[in-house]
Image 1: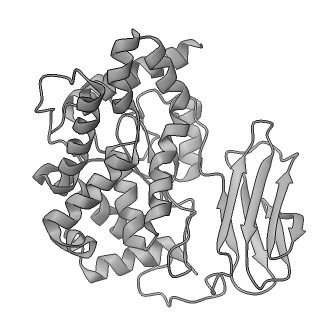
Image 2: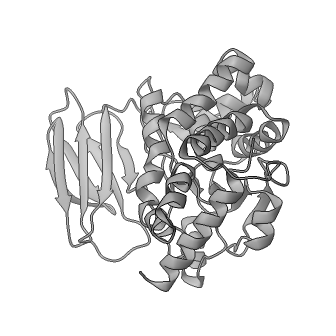
Length: 354
């Protein structure tokens, strides 16, 4: 295990202990245009592979031909359903692919994860299809784990990616111990979901107790006054200026996970896709979490594992809290987050295509 991996793993453990102590186009633009025609793709994804190649898959029922362009150059083609592996791309901060159908709008996609030396869960919030056939744009809003270990190379990459607003969801002790490192010119916005510090002084002693603590924490993020205020700050800010926004906590999975789940739901993404995005933190954080657990006695690791995981029951409890406290997600948007119809239209205008 490298030194940097050990450091990230150790901090992930500390962060888990801290966290689990908690009880585009302008709005006036027309919705259709040359690049926002109805998009025929029902599924599409770009996945980076360990050998430096990229796997591109798609489904576009009724379309006879799809051209695949990498960084503007045609590299492959196929029919209504396809899967190609693209090799030999030159080094770049991020490789972009256009799926161009014979008719209808194209899709502009990249691998969701952005590789950084000092963060393991920095990824694009977009690239998902909505229930009505639109797509969430990529390269606009991002989600991440902590930014205190970003290297100079990371900061330069984030600058080139156009990051300009950082929403920090962490509490006081986290921010004090590990203040964000920011590219020059990036606006820092505090949106403390927990309201300063953890109200719970003792850690769980069983795995069942740890899992219940995570469920209770998820509910608190939805309905507590500090949670509502923090997410109001984030979503109103993104509605005003989405381009180059990132929200993050320490591990990028719980407070950040609810932020993405709520945002994607607002945009019309179905629950199964929202859940898949949430659970992906288990994959992106697998190495750091495994290292943290391996450093503990087995009995202690069994208690900590639920706190390092993301689980369907955690996110489901957040949506259950929305229903119990507000009646519907639409009511949550309005009553908890203060989003009016104009702001929701703005979010969709900025973040959807098709």
